Image (cartoon, rainbow, N blue to C red; front, side):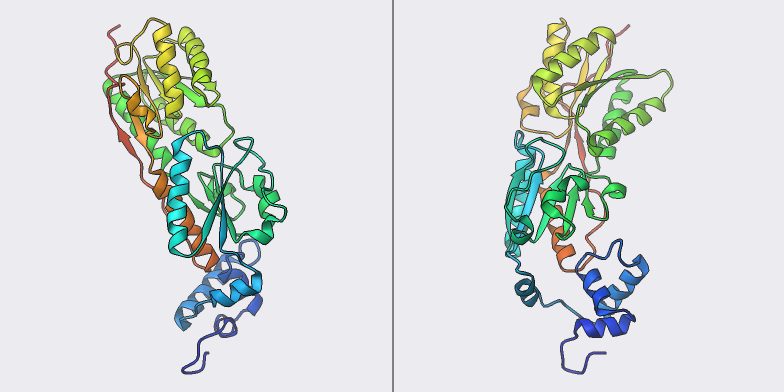
Length: 336
């Protein structure tokens, strides 16, 4: 127990929790997963709370050579979505005296090359969006705190995760289209090996499949308007869908062009939905029904989660809500 009038130390926390100081350091440093049990970690956190223990961040920064710099790894900078993620993360970082270095993975997804000669010496932590945790080994090693955005909580190797409620967004899309009377669906899926896109496929199949007399055909497309145009034109030629559900707004723009090439109209013959609510959504004619994702809040939550890990706290739980924005690209299906 800490002496009266003195600041409690990690040794005091260790004695109160009945563990070693090394265990306290692991738990309060956010590196306990896979090294100590959940029950032990909770006992350490409870002892720290009861004693009013707060890590001496200034001393710890000096000891560990911290630069108060965070790396934000994103798949690409080709849409404003990831610009919004950076803006949100940088805003929260600045409030806490941190800087954010933005690094787009050259391949979009998959292993990211180390952007520094010695990343572990230059960084305090990593926030990685839409990438597998084991793809960051070159940057993170097994030392740097990591927060994953848009990633499977069960498959992120113990890293903290922050997610948008993509499943609920797809549910809202499916219920909207089913409510309009659509029964023949085409899912234009992003040809990207990513958990977030798998969630979209699973949820759409489950929601539509629960209604008798429905069909869902899937066509994969690269994340480009031209790629979506080619894939949608071929798929709509084979399957006379009345609704096309797209994994993002850029794919939806390609579907618009495919529909017109086939001599059809949006939404009179084919309803189209997107996901992201980019500026592109209101530039299309008719304006696109899509799911609004708050990119800046996403970045803010990611940075707050990393700060929590750095301070030995548990990040806030719960997915970020999303909202279906209904515009003119959806309508009841044409009469048979």
